[in-house]
Amino acid sequence: MSDIPRFPLYDLHSHTQASDGLLTPADLVQRAADMNVGVLAITDHDTVAGVAAAQAAAHDLPLRVLAGVEASTLWENHEIHIVGLNVACQHPALTAFLASQHQLRHARAGMIAERLARASIPDALAGAQRLAQGGVITRGHFARYLVEIGKADNLAQVFKHYLARGKTGYVPPQWCTIEQAIDAIHDSGGVAVLAHPGRYGLSAKWLKRLIAWFAACGGDAIEVAQCQQPPNERTTLAGYARDNQLAASQGSDFHQPCPWIELGRKLWLPGGVEPIWERFPALAPAIADADR
Ligand code: AMP
Ligand code: MN
Ligand code: MN
Ligand code: MN
Image 1 (cartoon, rainbow, N blue to C red):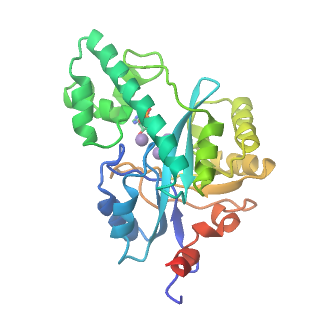
Image 2: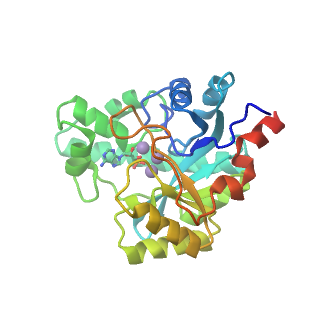
């Protein structure tokens, strides 16, 4: 047990090629180890397909890989993401939940492609599917395809002009409720975390409402720390976590190598919050090693 770091670096939000990340699970895990991450959660959009390969790749590295997922939900007409940590990937409740999410994603992808076709952008479904390489299809894949065919210079521009709410390729989502996502995560033994609360474009009043609702539905923690955040956001979110007796999580939401987001970077929690790994010791490395 002596080689277990006393203060492992936690990065509890990341993506692989199983959804819209650019790295394979094995490459993501190696990169996390290079960045001194001690506990990495793989949290692909509505799938756990990358987890097994990531855990296998971590076998000879000083790093624990947690099985996770990032579920898309709909709340008050906003798309809200709920991260599940340490889920049992084969649990029937999770499998059924993810199958339903896949159907919704499949239907939405077809509708996005139809809208783009009406705007004289044909073949977007085939293009996005090719880029998804058999993984879960996301707007990120449509965005990459549109960059590929020269409709915009970068992903942010594609979202702004084509895929954001109200734009040509936007389809009003039909995701499950926050409660359904939390229940599926809990039923499969996981911990439910409200992802990137600062990124939904909500006013302070609505953000407080969302966090209170998430807590009322049985949610466990909110992401307080990300590597790219406006000044003061961390302190504000820490206060909301405390007010609602929620634990605090942290994660990079890494999708691909880029200058401004990196695994493990700038991930620390302000004082006065309860770190998620202290409230749920099953997330800490020592438990994993005891379990092996
Ligand atoms: P989906 O879950 O299919 O709606 O896809 C959402 C994903 O698209 C997010 O997880 C991001 O990876 C990506 N995304 C959303 N907005 C943007 C943006 N403005 N720029 C780049 N990527 C984005
Ligand atoms: Mn994504
Ligand atoms: Mn997200
Ligand atoms: Mn994410």
